[in-house]
Length: 220
View 1 (cartoon, rainbow, N blue to C red):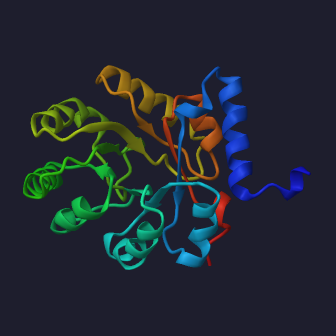
View 2 (cartoon, helix red, strand yellow; view 1 turned 90 degrees about the vertical axis):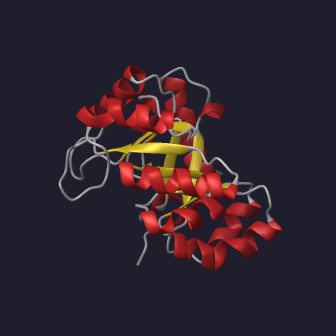
View 3 (cartoon, rainbow, N blue to C red; view 1 turned 120 degrees about the horizontal axis):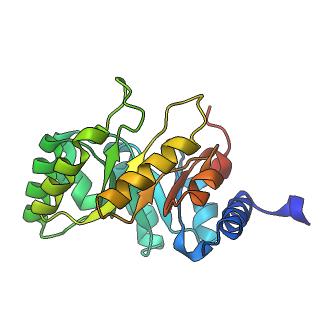
């Protein structure tokens, strides 16, 4: 019977297994299905199975495919998990229910202004450049306390911290470091873990996991 489980059921089973090992409640883990580059035909089966959290990388791509889907499944929540340019802040605030990539003062200013204009507060995760990699976005760990204060001062709901560990390196120490940074800064949400490592992330405190390939298969 197990082989007949859908990818969504398999991912939920893995999350439950990791929760059991770490004495956590699976209900405390939000599974974000990363639907970037996926068309409505690939997304609809997950919606039909009851998944309502989806992650997109680009504002424009999400604008093209989600309004029609949300009309049919109005309780869907969209999370922006990719880098956000300041000039797209207004569009992002209009479309997304949560933003995972707040990482710099200029974007903070743009988002606060966009939220004031829209009369809508969108929860944001502060993205931390956990491996201090030059090519990656994210606030450096040493700058985090000051930036978290700025976010709170701007009256933006702080959902937590987000990270993408360096590739090809054991991710667990980076997940543990993000959990420590969250505790040090009085933040509870942890957006960490992707298809290759989400069980480890759950065991180290993830509240939101961002899973694409394990649900949709490899992208071409």
